[in-house]
Image (cartoon, rainbow, N blue to C red; front, side, top):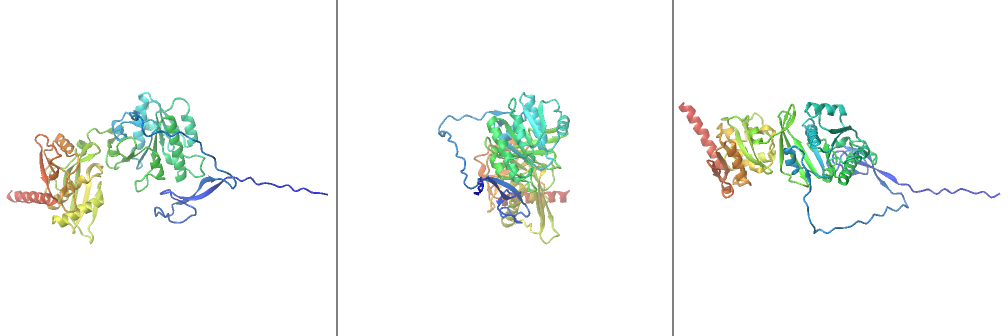
Length: 478
């Protein structure tokens, strides 16, 4: 009797590769290890499902052909939609571009959701479809915040959803929204990857799906991002490369001022800032930040200097406060808020070496009033003036502003846009400025405004020391 044996042929199936992804920087490894070799953090690797790999004998899908266009051609400006908030439009470059995706980051409670619900309400009142999707709050909570801000009558569409596929399917129905808020991207998930929500793989995949929808539909999407303890947006850095703009919302919890900066912007400048004031009725725009930052200035006190700065195209006057006190420690303390600590160390070294100002036995504290953060080197002269004023106990003139860059040789170098700085100072009632000598050809003196030009930091130190001696003599005579 003949027997037959069935032969089963195994069909090659695709399989998923397992990878271990660092939740801090997004680096992927084939095996688990305690320390991430890319960023140096410990215990940040977690197992995630990787991409599908074709099984043996299966050929990869063939790509389709697409048309290439010539570089030469008629270029058109991207159409923009005003958000209804002028400070937000200033940072974005004039409004939202159709099909663009923006990433907004900031500390918890800084006011990101408040700013965005105000922007959606402004667009909704202008007749545009605006959608606010929250993955962290219920609809009732978002509605309660809107009512507190006086926005309850705005026709903003709300939803509490985290599934990206459901969000895209819902938004594809009916009229295309002009503005979509996703709060936040770390709560979104998609079933195309086998990872928990909030992981690097999920954040990257969810952002990619939302970006594809924005480019296809022409809607503007704003993604809210959490930040780490270092102030960086949580998740993979590749998301910051994928989006069109990265905005940072800054401010101290003890101050009412909030600063909106653009770290990246494909459709506008990256050096503009928007200034807001946090009130009980929401965020209010500050049309003249200089006047607000100087409203509570201490006049006639040593250790304070007014810096005439530039943020983008906007001149900005802020107060720099310094305190130099004898130290009781073996190593003097150096504390700075709102300025680069390395820049402070450099200015202190120049004062010690070229100006004879001995600070090795003193603690040094430097603060930028109002929660402002200075990024340009033109603040060197103002910081040095405040430090020497505090050490010599010599108050600086209340009607003077300071700006200029200090080199390692002790020379004061010119800075850009000197005329705009002087014009802003004159508008706020200041009558003189201490500025670089080489900036004479660039600066334009307003009527009744005196510019004291200095060539080196030693000249400034000598002038402040003379003020201190004159003050002591006046007290002695009195």
